[in-house]
Amino acid sequence: MQMLFRQRIFSWFDSYDIYAEDGSVLYTVKGQLSWGHCLKIFDADGCEVGTVKERVFTFLPKFELFLGEDYIGCISKEFTLFRPVFTVDCNGWQVQGDFWEWDYQILTAQGLVAATVSKELLQWSDTYCIDVTDPCDALPALMVVLAIDAEKCSRNN
Image 1 (cartoon, rainbow, N blue to C red):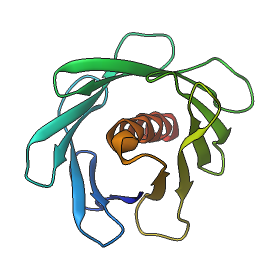
Image 2: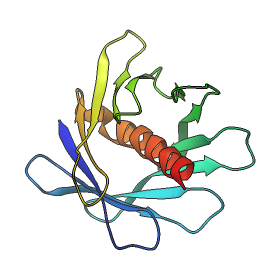
Image 3: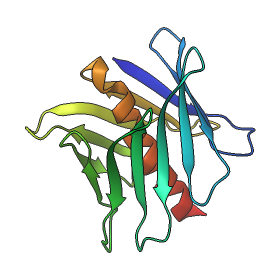
């Protein structure tokens, strides 16, 4: 399953549309006014299905992931000197790849690819292609990508 993740250009808060391969909207992500990033994820019918929330007052960025109201894990940035490294505590996943080039993979505990993420260059807004192996992992994979993008946006500001 392939998803196209596109940031809306003109919005006050972080706002994204997630499209299916056929161009239909799968999810809409809306940023909320809060301390740190708080991203609410809505399905095509407008029902809230998930949240990515930055935990504030931590030494390094940490994001909690919720499916509905249920906590499913977190992603946190590790202290490194040369390249960003993230620890994922969700589904036994790990993130591996080239964060400077915005291309990475989400791997299962068995080392299999759960999702491949690549940034499309020369776009007006942040645009990613997320290729998910199992459609059941689409929403959790999207949440991991949102957390990494939010951390990068904070670092660049």
